[in-house]
Amino acid sequence: MKRVTGIGGIFFKAKDPKALNAWYRDHLGLDVSPWGGAVFAWGGANSPAGMTLWTPFAESSNKMDPGNARFMVNFRVDDLLALLDALKREGCQLVGEPEISEYGKFGWVLDPEGNKIELWEPPAGQ
Image (cartoon, rainbow, N blue to C red; front, side, top):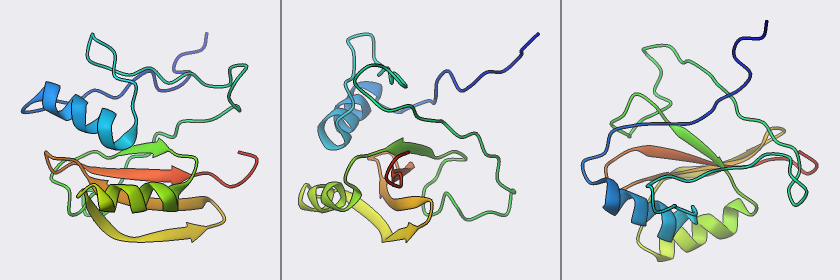
């Protein structure tokens, strides 16, 4: 019997869910549904197969800094540098400099409630 087969969702508390939904819609392009969430389909006819990672970090990790949450959401993006430029123009608070490695391109932004969001452009073909 299989037990866990993937991540089915990311859930967290927000001070103002409607305002936070609007920020994620307006700045990160999430297709927020009227019920208050977004659905990401993987490997359909119009998108390449993808993966979602689950990774616990040590209590002493600074990976989520300067965010104030004990979690961080990682979103796949198509063009990281263009998105970071757009977010900067829109007045969003970027964190650090983009990083490029064999695992892809990474950048970070804080949402209006201080949660650090990781943006990831996978390497070509992934």
